[in-house]
Amino acid sequence: MTKKTENVGLGIQAVSQQSGLSQHLIRIWERRYGAVEPARTESNRRLYSEDDAHRLELLNRAVHAGHRIGDIARIPTEKLEQLVGGERRSRLISSRPSEGLESRYIRPALEAIERFDAEALSNVFARAEVDLGQARALELIILPLMEHIGTMWQDGKLRIAHEHMATAVVTHHVGSILDSFRFEPSAPVIVVATPLGQMHEAGALAVAVVAAVGGWRPIYLGRNLPAEEIAGVAHKTSAKAVALSLVYPADDPRLAAEIDRLGRLLPNDLSVLVGGRAAEAYRVAIEAGAMDFITDVASLRQHLEQIRAHLGRGK
Image (cartoon, rainbow, N blue to C red):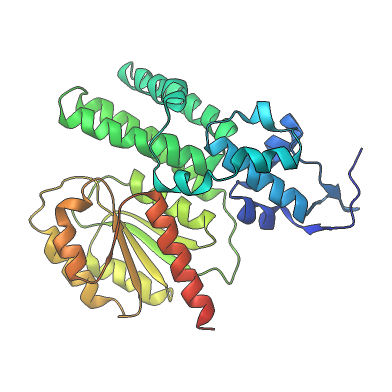
């Protein structure tokens, strides 16, 4: 039976932005687990109440804390509030997977990579998205997995072929998430790329997804872009921010000069965010260019929120 409520009026896109869940996952949690029961218009379009949006945001936070959606989807909202009370700050500080997430997703993913089993790796990501939501699966599973793979490869525990196979699967998977977004015309633009010499793009794709979840419209340029190309797109699109992902190599003698050149080509009031596994090696150049050094997903999200808040005050 379709729910009737006096406080109805939010479309699924608005609820997606408020809850941090993708529209696809909201539908899955609704249909498979009965997490919420939206009203329907005469044309069968979903309409959610503020209570629905609040409940979905609580469920997202609870799943992020390690609870299974199937176990908590139908418990009362008041109990959800008690369940996640006081947990939000600690979750935003670190994206390191808990032991439960390690055993449920990270280890099976590594086993699939060791077997060169791309289908099994994709299935792990799909299962994580259903259980955790796209944004949390990206933050808690996919990005830590890529960090782990990079370390294992550098330590000689994985072959370069393992790393390439995993990167290909992650790039395809995260790229398809980004393609599923629909953006508000008024959303601020962020240009996302890897600079010249940086050949790994999975991290940059992940940055684009995090930005999209935060209400930005990412212009994703891909890997190995000269400073002039990145700056040119930023100017042409009136971007409010540029994000760079630095993953490998960590000892490129050209990159510091490339970062400096980009800083000089961009407007002074445009924010530049730089992060990734190799970013620490170029920290001096990043900070010399008055760019923001991004340590993790929480740091990225915080910077993006601050920039949007500043843009809102400037209207």
